Image (tube, rainbow, N blue to C red):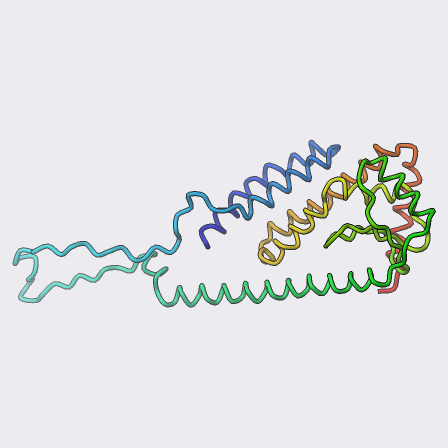
Length: 266
């Protein structure tokens, strides 16, 4: 297990070092950059192929051959040969086993904490979903028009008071949650439906699952941050491509959303 983690961490780090400069060269193609970071994430957890077993037992002692008297006795005393401890011997020692058990215990404890946090987040979102109201006819018509233009199936649409920006609920059947006031523009709706067209909800599920196992891994957090950034940039690019005439309105909506989020009571 340890060898697998080290092997994957090294391979993923090398791959990330290659992807990082490509983000500058491909900054106008965030969707492609997102795929590259996704490959780094997958490389972190790919099953080991040809990785040697890390906990090799102590090497067997060579057979004892009959020694000549001159080799056995020196000055009338028997010569004692004490084998020096090796790294493999330490790996098989009780101290090494105790260390491994401690690390595994810390990993399990951290994973339970992260899992509890994710479950709490799901419960809170479900409560929000329960208090959401059905969208009015105007909002449904606008969302249906945007979905048709982006060639995606129209998900359920719910309006919720007290949120700063829309989001796509994707734990089960996708549902678009939008602020009750003000009514989102078609460019803002296009951004959220672009997530659905890109299948970002599947990526979010994978990310949440891996966070339980890789919460301790620094590279995982770097990759997750880059994936979220490029995912949002790719959806922004989809909005600009689909509604080039709404660029200014979309930029204004992003600023207003940020202002509402900053002034919303926490």
